[in-house]
Image (tube, helix red, strand yellow):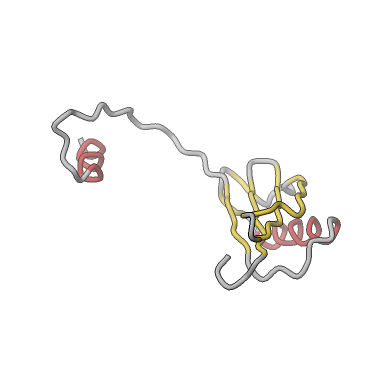
Length: 108
């Protein structure tokens, strides 16, 4: 929210689009409005945006229906479907570069 006091959070999950209009004030961050609606068929599949036109129309319609306007900044969260490959036990003498340890484990 740099340079702006209001922002719109957009969360796109498997079946729902959630909007949160936030405003920063002296007390912190305040929720001004919230809205939710279905993700249109064919817009998102397996965590990937398949049809951005359909998805953007659904977001615009949800904003209009709930009178959310005048937004210059937005943050978007899109659901992905992660798969756990392996749970690692980190040894006590693990290197400080944990990323290297994970990459080596994934390679093996």
